[in-house]
Image (cartoon, rainbow, N blue to C red; front, side, top):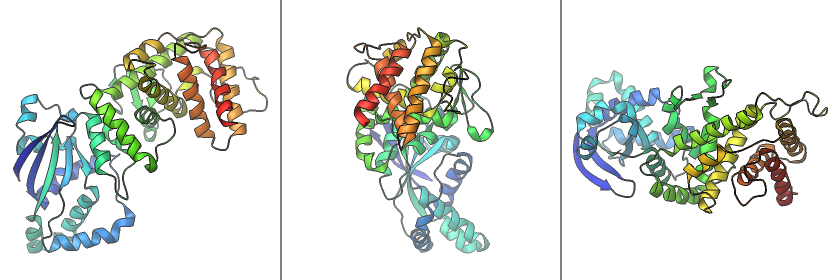
Length: 387
C-alpha cells in the first residue's frame, strides 16, 4: 500500500489522497467497517450479473476504476495529520472510513477473495493485484454528503435519507448536549422529553437540507445537489445537524413549558378514536412535524425571513400558548380533517406542519409565535392551496 499523490480539493475544503494497494489490503481496510455500520447500503441484487462479469475481469487482472472513501471527521485527526496524511494514519482510523463510491465493487472484491480461499496460489495472485483508492481527508459531514450525492448519480444511488443516516449513525445512543437519539430496533421509546427517534430526526434534517417537507425522490436529485452546494459553502466549519437537533429540542421543551401537563380531553371528538397526539410531545415528536419544522426553517432562511439557524433557535424559545387545551383540540381537529379528506395523509400532514411553522416563525405573520393561532392558519392555508 503506497500513497501516489495528494491533491487539495478547495470546493469541499479537504485533501484527496490517491493510494495504490492490493485487493487483499483493500479488503482488510474496509471489511470491519462494512460489518459494523448498519446504515451502509446493502448489495444491489439487480446487478448480480454485471458484477459477476467484474469478478471474472478481476481474475485476469482487470484494472477497475478507483473506489472513493472518506475519513469521517469523527476520526479526530489533528490539522497536521490532515495536511501530511500517511498510510499508518489511514490504517489506524479505518473504523471511521465511509465508502462514497464503489460499494458494489467492494462487495465483488470481498466475494472473489472468499471464493478463492480454497485455491492458495490463485488467491495469492489475485490478492496482490493492484487497485487505486481515493481517500478524502478532512471533510465535515456535509462535505461528505455533497460528494456522495455527486458521485452516486447512477442507476442505483442511495437515497439522501440513507446517506444522512449513515453519516450521522454515531449519534445513536450518544448525548448531543442533553439530547438522546434512539433506534427503534433497540426496543426503546422516546418517553422522556429529551429523547427522540433517530430516523424521525433524520427525516426532519433531510427536509431542512432539501427545503422540502416531502420525502426525497430521485427526480429531485439535481435541485437537491444545488441546495447542498449552497449549504456547503455556508457551513464548512459548523455542525448543522447538531444545530437542527438543538432547535427541535428547544421547541419541544418550550412547547411543553407552555402546554404543561395538559392532555387532549377524552371526549374531544367521538368519531375519531385515534387522535394525532394527546400531548404536545406526541404531536411534535412525530416525523411529519419534524419535517415541517426543517422545511419551514430552510425556506425562511432562503427567503431571508430568518437570518440563520441561530435566529430560528431564539424564536422557538419564545413561542407561547394562551390556552393549552384549545391548542391540542385545534391541532388534532385540523389533522383529523386531513385524515378524512386527503388521499396521501402523510404528505398532507407534512404540508400542514410546514405551514404551521412558517407562520409561527415569521414576524410578519398575524400568528407569529402563537401556537393556537398558527394551528388554525395552517389548516386554512392548506385548504386554500389544495381544496
